[in-house]
Amino acid sequence: MVRWVKHKAGTGERKCTRCTSWIKHWENHTNENRGQCSVYGCTNPAREGAHVITSRTSSKREYIVPTCGSCNPRSSTEAFRLVKGTPVAPARKCN
Ligand SMILES: [Zn+2]
Ligand SMILES: [Zn+2]
Image (cartoon, rainbow, N blue to C red; front, side):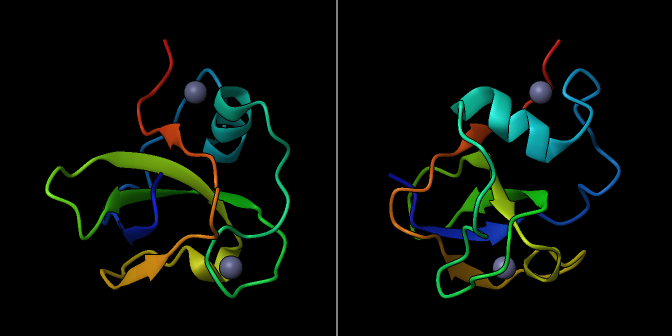
């Protein structure tokens, strides 16, 4: 279960070409439809797949989570909490 994450900087130009967007990539991997932003406390609809890295854990893993536009800033390294039970997709391009 992933709870605390940080945005991974410098990933804006990376993209999953097979899924066409990271939010689609997240949907394809989790079999979920985008709903609300996965940032704890935010109630905006999710529109983007945010590239995050786990925080407060010994192993750093990268994932894609659905967020609204304002929760996916281009440069932020602040840790934030995900809504409990948010499914995550691997931050790897499909091929
Ligand atoms: Zn993909
Ligand atoms: Zn949000």
